[in-house]
Structures are given as C-alpha cells and as structure tokens.
Length: 209
Image (cartoon, rainbow, N blue to C red; front, side, top):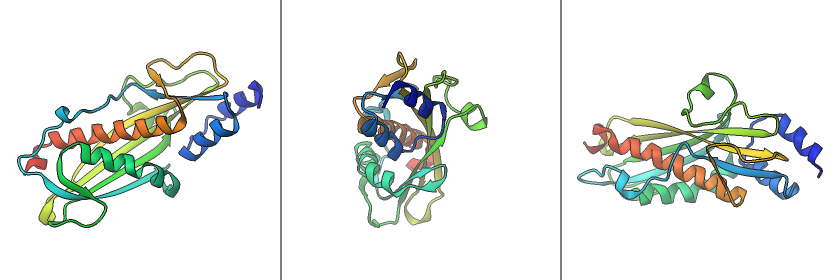
C-alpha cells in the first residue's frame, strides 16, 4: 500500500476502533504507527490510598466504541483490566464471579473520536488536537463505578486517555510515546486509564467507609 492510500485513510479522521488499529498495521505494514499520549502516567502501588479493610470485589468490564458494545475489544483487554485492578491492592480479591458481601467494581472504556467538540475539550491539556492531515487521535473515556458491600452508595470516577496513529506521516506527535505494536498501545492505554481512575477512587473518602 503506497503513501497516498495511507494519507486518504488518515484524512478520513474517523474513530479508530481497536479492530481497525490492528488491521491497519497488519494490512499496511510500515504505514501506520501508534503513539500513546503522555497525559496519563503509570500508577504504582504506592500511588493508591489503600482502605484500612480491603473488601473482595466482583469485576464487570466492557469496552465500547462510541457507546456500543465491542465484544472483540472487551475480550482483548479484559485480562489487562483485571490485572490492573488486582495490582492496585485496593481489594482483598478481584474476581469475575460474585463475591461475599456483594461488592461490585464496574469498569467501562469507551472509544470516542477526538474532534473539536465539547468532549475533546474535556481532555487534559496535554492531549494534542488538530494535528495535520495524516494523524488520527482516538479518545478513550474510562468510567469506574464501585458499590461496596451491603449495598453501599455507588462511587463513580472517570479518566481520559488517547492514542495517536500516524499513517504515512513524518515525525511523531508531540507529548506521546511510540508503541512497539498495536497490542502494546491499546494495553498500555487500558492499564494507564484504568489505573488513574482507580487512583481517584481510592482517594474518595467514601471508598474507605
């Protein structure tokens, strides 16, 4: 596939689903390069505020594309999300099955196109918008809902992230880290956006009750 075809794909500026991102790099080798935005950082165990008495939690995870269920991407990222929740140390255990006490941790990552609209303006300052021609940016909104044991009041937190994909472009987008491959890009995004949402959850006084 030549440079001009790559430019037309990028010029469409449509939302890049996880499936498309993989397809672009498989079908168009050397054409598409992915970069994870640097607006969010990795969260270490020390960054979380651990509750005095951690509770087991059941994890429900879903990936969406513009609000619609994306089963393929959910399957792809469910282990990364589960491992991130376990590594946080915020819960006595994390399982996809119901747990004693009934605590429920629901995590959704919604892939939304980043354009010059109200949603885009809600992203952190570090995100790069309006990149010329052959750079497409995908936004990801992570929502974490937690309901503690015995029907405790639900706590909701959100975090935003982005992946930039260059197709036939020269140079890397600013404030972004090049991924070795599409799998690394989407898994890094998921780990970072979920980790940061969980960090905000841990800082909420209601989480320790």
